[in-house]
Amino acid sequence: MNVGDQYFRKVFVPQNALRVEEIISGGVTTTYIGDATVGTPENAPRWQIRKIVATTVDTTTTTVVYFPDAKDDYAFTWSDRASLTYL
Image (tube, rainbow, N blue to C red; front, top):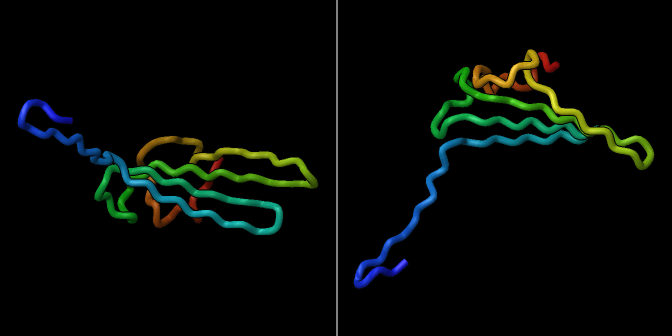
């Protein structure tokens, strides 16, 4: 944006880090999505994690979203995503 002789630039600075892992096995696609503040270590218990399971049988796909312990808190570690209990 130009204003007189000055140039202003908008800079987008992401507030959150995002991690995505997708595992495809047969007719089941499991996707883990992790969200945390930028700079959060993957082993810090400050991640919100979702597990999305899409199952395809014939031509019908059913998709279900799960959270660890049925909580959408920022209280989990990304590095433990596969071993958490999802409800």
